[in-house]
Length: 250
Image 1 (tube, one colour):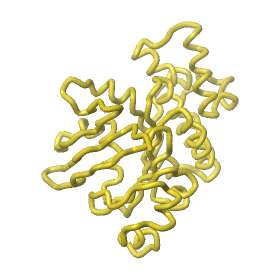
Image 2: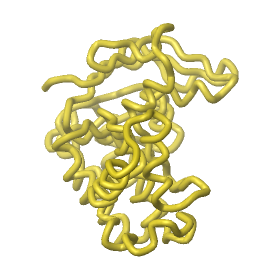
Image 3: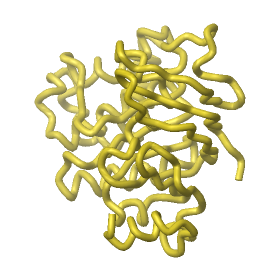
Image 4: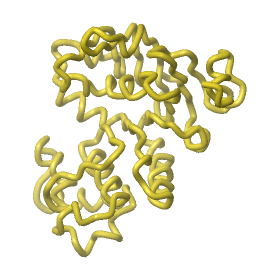
């Protein structure tokens, strides 16, 4: 397994209450990693540590290292905007920007000066096609993004995130607010995208983890209890706490 992200001695606390405790974990390159565990165990906290989302929280204290290709994302010289370009986040509920469908996808390209003019239009189409949205919106690109359905908005947010050419896609329960058809579309897209991107998702659905994951991480009370290939770990885990979770006991 080639590690794309290496987490070393990571601790996160809020108002001096520990949320993550000495996490050490390697996340494989160009695979889908699913983080599972009961509510409140630190899954989302770990996920958001991977793109410095906690910088937005005044009372969050983070220590340790998160290495992307051996570069520490928390090093003083690393700009947070650079981190979030390389590591994109899909939230539980989509948050399209208050602008048109076209401008949502073009936003990051403009901010990072990645394209303009005719090339910009081609790139917007390209990323909408990747997100499986082009045929549905090509005749209304300048309509407000908020007019889209929730499922379409989630795919639009995915297209917007991919447009800045990240290396890693994070998904914090990316299908939890969607209807079954939209959820299936997002799952299908994630499977296709793993050929190009390292993907890490948090999920409460064991069936989803079994459908999607190449690698699985089980968390409990702020700690990583067990991690390994999903086919092995989700069937015959080594730790008794993982077994208890998979059997519904905790």
